Length: 510
Image 1 (cartoon, rainbow, N blue to C red):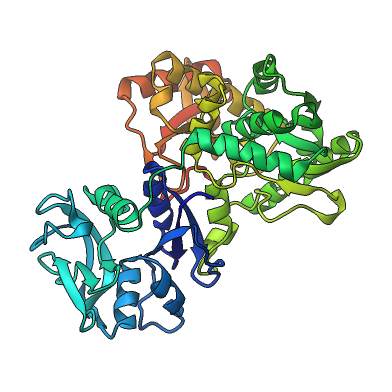
Image 2: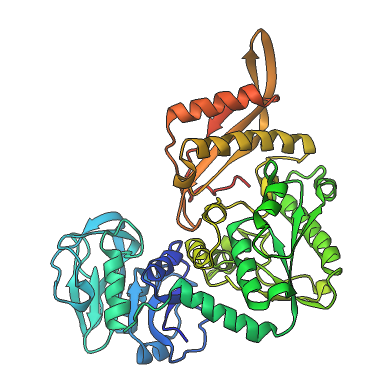
């Protein structure tokens, strides 16, 4: 068992960034909701308490009893976690006269404090709280402050319990990763043994023990997640893995043929199934985004179920579920994250399918999936593919879906993606695509007045899709792409560029 840091999630939007930082240190960690604390065990080296949108004094605020954790492990409280820990030790938390949000500079730091090793004097940190710690208890010692916050960092004397009111996990806290390293490496004693090679060896062994001589069916999408999941399952069970690739009519231009060709030579047992008409029939007349997602998901299951029955005695369904899928499908606060990704099969399958789920990548973030894929020898071309949503172009067509709209979007999308590759920009963008908008605009092409569709180009930078920033593509590049789309795709006469970040927007439009 790997050394582990347990992260208790109190509902912060950036809790996953704590995990991201620790994984960058090759330290294994898991996020669990505050009200579903897992069984404590010897493999846990320390616990981190996340931030929260709640105040500790707010009705309904998460106020768990952490006595067992305090008695067994080093604890680091971040923002709300620090405030909660202060109240547990007899301190007081008060409403701030003004919200403390944004950049701040550390002051009065005890530079030889274990948590501050390697942290620069006057280092920039990121604040985001409406409450502030007035006292942290009789045994609390301050090891850093800011101009407005006395208890920016404190420790309960005699025990390994620390609190910081800033967010070391966000990139705006310039020495945040160093502070987290001080906690997990020096204080908790982690050695950083969570590596791709170790993951592959351990996962293959676990899969062999779990699956025995059973057959597994896996739905391939051509994306990184399903590809890596397929290869690692194939390493574990060989030809007992049966892969199915469904053409739902919502793939990118020529993607069905290209994906099947990509898998040639990889030794995978892959069957391609053309089912575009079934999906179009199911989507006919639907405009609501959630209704479209559900129709796509149900149709896929129907097609997949029919194909899976052709594999005799199959007992397992392999899925490329990754950690952000799990995080976004389970909320610590019962909030909207529970429905962000309704097309994911996180949580199970329809009873009638009678298949057990195996998810070899369930603990990995997207960049970790790519690192694992590289250790498996998968080509850089496949690993470097941009993420593509499960419902495909179905959530990039706003409004109802028809075969003609899909054709328009495929042509425009191909021009955009191919241009990114030709200009050496593809690998500098995390995800890109074209959105077909539900509007028509007047245009003039030659001597002809047109009334045709508009599309939006979307390109974002990100680490794992949990947050994303729009990419500042060169104007000259955008101008050429716009011109090429309008000239080459009959039915489109206007192109716009989406400069929204996540949050508040999502990467996809639906």
